[in-house]
Image 1: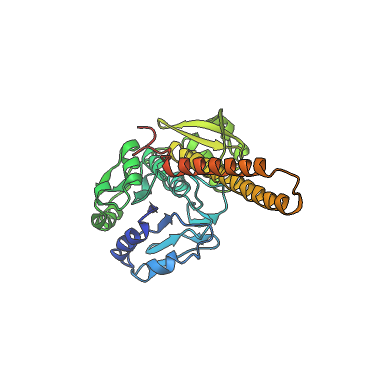
Image 2: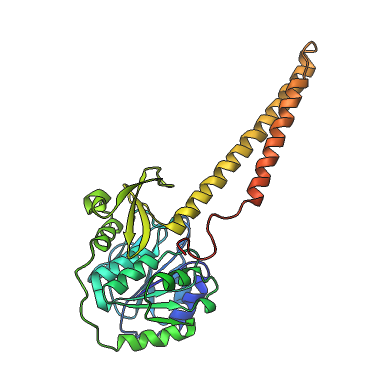
Length: 331
């Protein structure tokens, strides 16, 4: 079983894990978006409310039933047939850990025996991975958006994947217990090239050697992380992007990244204009004190112009709307 969540996810994970017991007959791997410098205490927090064994493996660990595995900070969590391990693969949808690599590798390794669960969160990380689980015969579950503190991630999954179950959070744990008692359907392979390639990238293979050029074509856009060319792919009807170094974006996450770049550039321009005004003020004082024959008015005028331009940019920053529309960018 693999679980993905973001904003509002800590409380959701408490509820999920708190309603599963130590004899749960399957391993559970979970990703919650965290900052790179997170202290890595998620597993300890969840461990206080559940009888499951909860760990954040620093190295490869054997998959055991009744155990919940969390990605350590700044690591993806990838699943292999008998083990789970953290990797430093490239960020996906602006995060490491990201949900898609976990789900994609679970789909590749376990096919119809994989169960994917998307909980509360913003944007759309997890949608592509949940689609891979569905594509390979696994079971897909999404928290009802009306029940989610942040509904965007569940809504995206529902909008792009033929989800098997959409339930309120408190109904998901008993469903999971029931699903582990049911026979597994037939393998739906072979693994699609796009799933295989992206799973290999998450396992730290060089993207071009993993086959990126065979599943994507160069686009006109650049990677917000490394500024390389983004390659565009179509995955089950959805457009996504990867660069040669492996950074991956959905349309929503790419818009969010470009939005951050725009705001950062505007603030840099504001800082430069304000520093220019301060420098001109200092230069004006120097001219008045030491060069009485020089007219300081032009310097004062330029300083005033710089402050006016900075004020205009501040107004743009405060008034501009997000590039992300309500719901998915593809709708």
